[in-house]
Amino acid sequence: MILELAVLDWIQLHLRCGPLDWLMPFVSGLSSHGEIWILFAAVLLLLRRQRKYGVSAACALTLDLLACNMVLKPLIGRIRPFAFRPDLALLVPPPGDASFPSGHTAAAFAVVFALKVAGSPLWRPALALAVVTAFSRLYLYVHWPTDILGGVLLGAAVGWTGAKIAEALFRKREQT
Image (cartoon, rainbow, N blue to C red; front, side):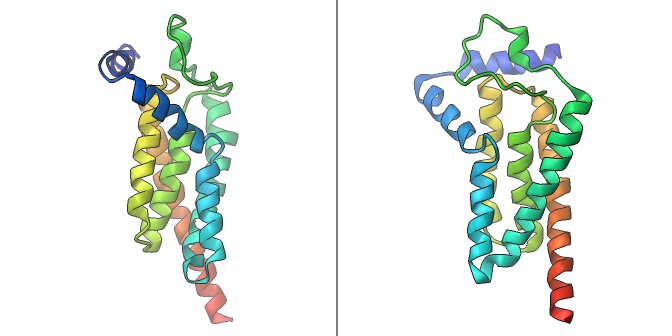
């Protein structure tokens, strides 16, 4: 935990600045409840030629919601880093749930991996937003680095699984 606090403090000391103080809450807010990723999946579902990717992303996000928010966060109950630094002025309202794993990061990477496994070229721009989202959670001092790593790994697992479920659904549909 001391090493993780050192990483977070380094970010605060060396990277914190006015433009990022505006940008990071904005980027983080895009994913506060998975909104940007849900909207992205919904748009893909509406586009006939992209529907397979939309189903993959929707399955991944559903699995993420169950695994991250309903199982892991309550089970682990990790305290957030800002609780150790009450002197730090937060740029966002303090989240009320547990810290591990990062739900923002897990949802973002769930979509990235679902798209990648399903074969969509859209995984690349999704990855760019996912990386910035994950960094924003460190910048805002609301997650530990290992929360972010846990979110990436969980996102990879549920993204892969979501794509495989979608693949099986489409294969079954083609057979009927």
